[in-house]
Image (cartoon, rainbow, N blue to C red; front, side):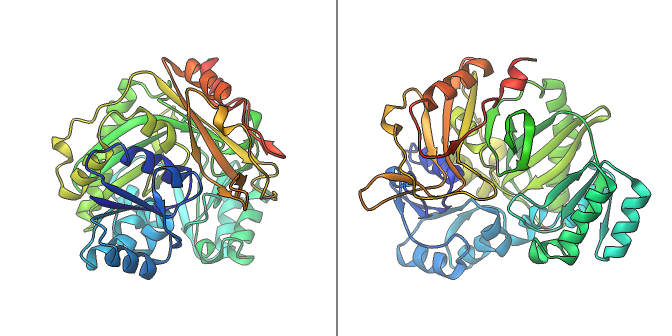
Length: 421
């Protein structure tokens, strides 16, 4: 079959890498892709949010299947547009992708169906939001309602910091229309865990648990990023917690979306906080997370293309999804200065010396001499397996050693907080 993956980051490289292993995938394309993805798929220069361009190309080139990976095209309705053109597509339709595209919607859904989450209020009036912060005190969490490239959440340690976040979002428009509505919620405490799950509109099958590292610097210091590394599975996610999450969060969410006339078919991301009262939802995403996808798909032992089709056909309950034993760790190598200001175009050396790991490309391109250069903030995701988490972490760092470019930056403690507990 001819398959197109929409997107161009490390997550999409991992998805293409895994789909290329399926005997059912004869031709693989990625739009827009990147220099690393070009090693496993033919890259097509179409922007991920160009709905008309993507549908037109998919039709003209007789794609049998399109997998839409990023949040923006899902929220814009790319799956709906592809289906309307008669093309089989994987990912939630627009009316289900709202579970990520609107935090106000997702909080109301949880409230209506009794799914555990932080207590909250939603505001469209700035003065009312500021008054609520005075009333609640700090620490407190301020969230832009819409999509904000993963940066629309401020965990404020003081009342003034929270108020400034509201002003930035509602008055100064730092996130554009995404911040015209804000959700303000209590600051929960406890270990954070991510569980991605496959869903077919009625059934939900969780993947292994994982843990992302959002802060730019060691010790969880510095600004929030798209993710500086991830590992799977999480030692904090015990079988008892998994059973409770399935019963109280995962299945109730999929059932709630079906009851609302918004059946969710695709990958749903459950961001969880393991609070003293039990697991609660921090956030939903309507797609694979990045960089959690890289270690998760490295551990997947089943055909990803078969799973995608089961999600579309409503037959997920008939799948026996298998995972490798052990653990996986993805170490993100970033441009110096990310996520604020960084230079592009520096030649990357050492990629051909990497052993016993897969290097997923997130932000690379080829220069005029055919050399890989950095072309984004997060550049590479060095992903390695191990018999346990400690071994996976060690293997990822060892594999990354030969790689270098001017001002390259990475955290030295990915996974190590958990390894040392």
